[in-house]
Length: 447
Length: 126
Image 1 (cartoon, rainbow over the protein chains, first blue to last red):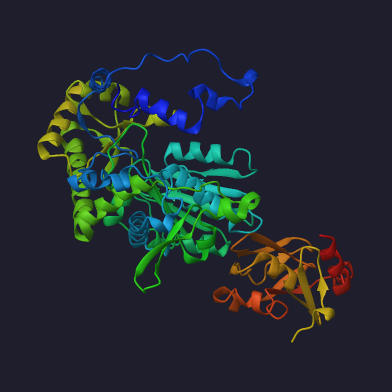
Image 2 (image 1 turned 45 degrees about the vertical axis):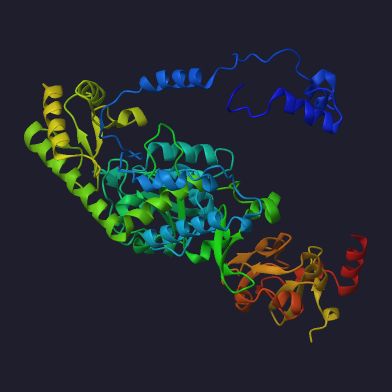
């Protein structure tokens, strides 16, 4: 008897006799015998709950433990206990996308609040109910740009965006006759002088990222005007935690804002789940991918939520669909919403401030005491890139022996990057003691 | 009241009304009937240029999203901004609610369009 298989043999027999068949096998009688699999599936025997737990625990114990300075899109932030407690409620946790959405007012309200928070953070007018992650959000944003500009077939992107975003873009547009053009970087940021000469009638938009893959903040002054003169759109990707301190996408004049909301209450899992956010100007509302929850009133005039723009791709657009996103990342986005409601507006500002100050403390100390230098002299948020005198992988390996994950070796994300670059993230979780230990360990590793 | 007998039609259910060198475009009574409640009309951009037969914009009803094709070549010179907030005008007055107007570059293209009678026949054959 397995606790996760609730039916006893007796119950199964009763159910079968109720519908008038003798065996479970008979239920598949309609499938022609020649296409049916016969024999036993090659699966291990069932195990008891204790055996399964012990096995998973053994696997989990193989995880290496260390103080994390890893980032490059996935960060080790404090997660308030409200997030797990509320997300774990069965009303949310076990419910899949509601197919009669208006019945699930709680889920719709949570999504509506997520959308509202994203609009506030990005200073843009409309947000959808979320996408899979930041990289797919970037690709959907580029598709949105293509679909809302006439006779365009080209997307420009900065060389300083996350290498995984580039890969997802390539996968998305591989078979669509869309040209992807990478613009050069200069001193660790997009070379904005390179934009003008690349613009033309065929360019749908430009995708940029700040803080970028090196952690550097980019200056987009004048960029949206330049693009709009050519009827091209500006797409800005940002770590949403940084938006507590830096200029938002809307303030830069961006048409579309995207990013990954993992920093808001989601653990730094290996591979997710994460959440992509996408917000845009009202003009692009009808072309937004996915679904949008709206606020309305019920027949008694009370506040109620509706799936205003639901999966139109499935329902009415069909072969004319411009995106295949029909769902959203509801549970993880709920985690983001609970997180933001817990920390609040002032809390988010304070978090951003702490991230920034701690990262700057560590960078300064490394420069002074460990004699290492930053790869570029640019403003940064909670992450910076070191240019080391040795291979970054070797330095990180040696520091791991001291119980420190020293940072992301950029060359491992993108083989075209030099092998001595190490991107270091410092969140509010890191203490002065941990950072001082980092500096000592770095000194040892460079000896 | 606009009389459909004086309009030109496309098989794809758009009507065209000619005033000098300007062609006004909307959708037929039959089309709005088939689509049901129109919930959104994408207003095209003034100054965009189209060839005859090219997709200009989209309208969405509760049942379907449908493209609207240019009856003739030319430049969009006027759009019906009212439809942005009141797409139901197309259901209410299909032959008055134009969606956009094109300044024709080649008025002889009008000869390729159907008369009201011819259009009625194509509907019956559908």
